[in-house]
Image (cartoon, rainbow, N blue to C red; front, top):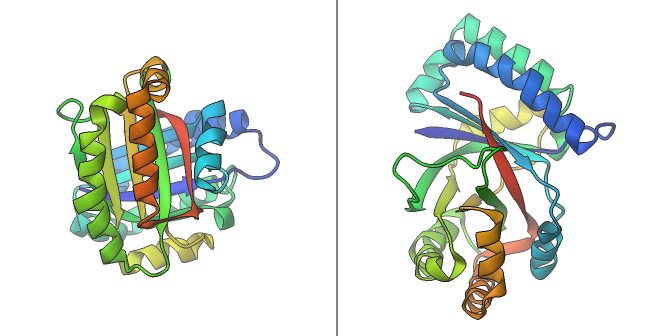
Length: 256
């Protein structure tokens, strides 16, 4: 499955609630209407929630301010994506969606790129969704690599060293699911960026789920959870440039 990740900041005149409401109630149904035309098999909206833990996590890493949300759009494969957007109908649908984005997304302060998922901790077969009405909660961590690392070196360390470290600490952290979303080097990234005058892509996204906020609080309050968090942050510094990265807690809304 091929994924397009679109991390967004809202237009300056909108509150976070206004942005999320428009995205969910107007833009989401528009994407659903066009899903067959553009070959979409999955579309997920990920909303940042206002939580004091966001600032604590940011401060502990010296990270950037959080974004307002993430759109995840999935196609069966790259061939399907190319085939669909070669048609006049799909091109018109893409134009309509782009015009509507401009009503709530500040494109020059947002970023989008193609990526692929690697599930490290499954949770339950078929994946999970931290829906707004459910107790489940999700952490998203968008990161840029250290300047001395190539993208391949960054991804190799993340996959072969940091991922197993997260697995070893999963019980202490009460983690339910953990996915590494690795950025693909693809010429389409520049095409997507240019149509929106968007920022450069991040190098990867770590996605972590807990069964509820209480499980996360218990993990952070326990001595073993604190030791695990400290060790993971120390290891992050071996491949992540936290000053150009961003992380926050979120809820999800599955549209397609």
